[in-house]
Length: 251
Ligand code: HEC
Ligand code: HEC
Image 1 (cartoon, rainbow, N blue to C red):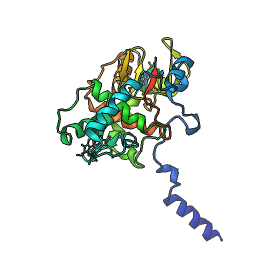
Image 2 (image 1 turned 120 degrees about the vertical axis):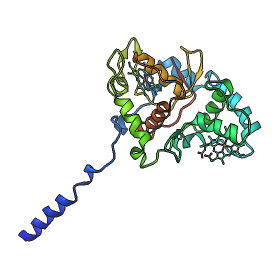
Image 3 (image 1 turned 180 degrees about the vertical axis):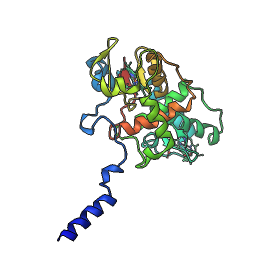
Image 4 (image 1 turned 60 degrees about the vertical axis):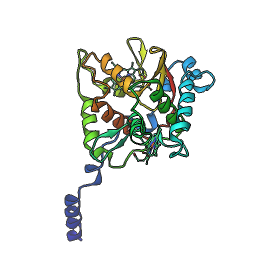
């Protein structure tokens, strides 16, 4: 019997319990996770919910037209396409929804790629995200082992700017509170592209992220900086299970 016990200890020592190797998990627990709509005013929330009042639907309608003209020959159904992004490319870079639209636009529709934040690009992105409403972004089970995820994790936790903040300061620790008279959400991307009252237009998640860098009083990356795409992948991992609700309406 004593031998058996020693053996059990031995086995335990050489096979450490699985928590030692389990992949990192988002800081906000599954039960506590809430989209940005839960932190906006009741008026904006009502506007988002009603397709007749949601200004983002103008972009959705425009995107639907372009899609049926240029894309539907290959993509018979728009549903679910946006939920597959962001994804990792074979070279380890991150392909966002906007990247993929432009990739198909130049390689398959054989037309020049759309400019960043241009009307047709936002229209297609809004239409595809809308067509995936209620679904969640697919997250590869081993995403945390990718270099892109790891780069984004360091960026998300890197203290920077004049305020000595990182993304976590606001979105993991201060959500539900007010900073500079703005209600802070958990910082999920599932509402994007979103219509922002402050912009008076629809904008991409990429643009929202640059606004956060600006808010941190630090160097704002160029729209094409790959760290922003890495962060989109990281945000999708962090928001696992939250349904896509684009086009959202935000302050
Ligand atoms: C000083 C506080 C602050 C910091 C630091 C900050 N943000 Fe934000 N962020 C905001 C505010 C304010 C908003 C708009 C209101 C809201 O949704 O929280 C916002 C919105 C967002 C949204 C959109 C949420 C939605 O549902 O509309 C995302 C995504 C986001 N931030 C990600 C980030 C990332 C990634 C970083 C780090 C690069 C970051 N934020 C750093 C304050 C901050
Ligand atoms: C000639 C056929 C063709 C046309 C036209 C085309 N696509 Fe694609 N599209 C593909 C193929 C094949 C894939 C999957 C391979 C890849 O990831 O590039 C794809 C992938 C996608 C994806 C990602 C879905 C996934 O499974 O990862 C999106 C989003 C998308 N296309 C949007 C568009 C849009 C928007 C247009 C019109 C501007 C368009 N496509 C035009 C063939 C096409």
